Length: 102
Image 1 (cartoon, rainbow, N blue to C red):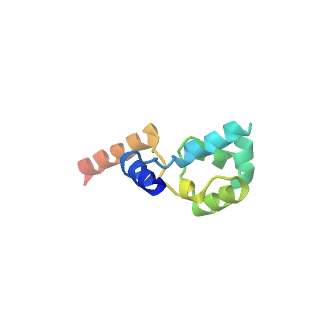
Image 2 (image 1 turned 90 degrees about the vertical axis):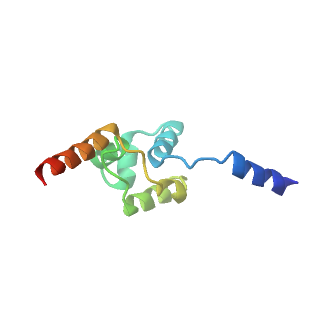
Image 3 (image 1 turned 120 degrees about the horizontal axis):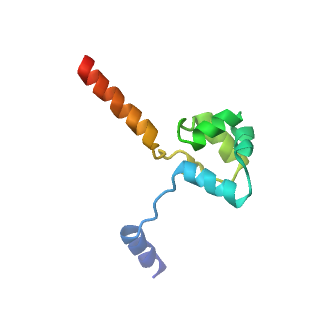
């Protein structure tokens, strides 16, 4: 019976994998951690700022360090992160410029 319920729920109500940046933010909030704490884990506070602002993607090394220091599953950290509105605008702008110049 349990297997049937699990199969039904997996098919009809799948649980979405969390966004890695949101997972990091949630863990930090729940543990009263600040940006500097993330910076200490991944190497520097400016890099932590870029990651949290979605201006820099998590590297494999950052993922290893975060997963080693905090109980955030690697499966969550390796997921693609939602792009910031700013980075989407930059990509579009670059494509438009190329279309005009190319």
